[in-house]
Image (cartoon, rainbow, N blue to C red; front, side, top):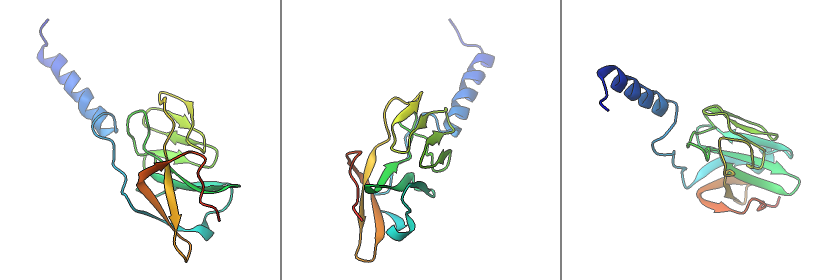
Length: 142
């Protein structure tokens, strides 16, 4: 079977569009050190994206936690192409939905979002360590 010019252009255009929408290619890499504000500004029962950093910071009854916002399906950065709340994390690229803890509620994603190590300095300034994953039940006690 040979590919005609028209079919080749359609395939190539589809690949370019898919890449522009965040499909395929390399997933964004998280910075190893991400400033996440002060612990006093993270209210219990909240989860918010750290703008343009690919992570979210939240607090529940057990403490402060961080979760990656890089979709486990195709690597879309949901801090830019998604919606984040304590109840759900939605990926606008392909429709995956996660709960506020990063567990998959609706695919196409199959794997949960990784949790990341969070530390605080003496003044309560939070740092998310984008290169260090941790168990989903790990919290920074406050």
